[in-house]
Length: 215
Image (cartoon, rainbow, N blue to C red):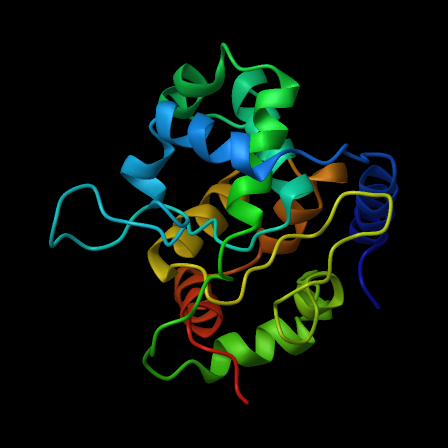
């Protein structure tokens, strides 16, 4: 059984998701706002992710096909400072919720992020599917789905699609959850779920999720 503190966090997460419904944005307007707001410089015109300079290792999140409501929440959290990133906060601080919904709708309308081949990741696959209850590591699949491509929520906030995301970005974010630098999941469920992971396990999970899903 999972520790009671993690069970409570998961419950709080589900309640928070159910209460965070978002109105739909306009993807046509969102494209113009995303271009004007410099989103393409880092995340790519179609949300395919990118690198800080040409030829460098990818660094920025893939946004293509991500759930719009999830993207809106992240943009709101950057704007408020709840999710710490000075550059992102600077970019979105003058945008209102309608702007954020439009930008999110544009990236959500783009082709779903695709994975790339990765080295062996048996440990990552096991942790994703089964977790480790003895250490309080919940199975990632219990929230993100067996494939890592969760369906849009009905009337609530979607759990993000993680399959096909960039491995370096995933590794960085899992590290931020684990250290407590990032704390914007409902009930701090991600902080608790990642707290016991080792560096090697974080890398293995990131590689597993960054690879294309098995047919």
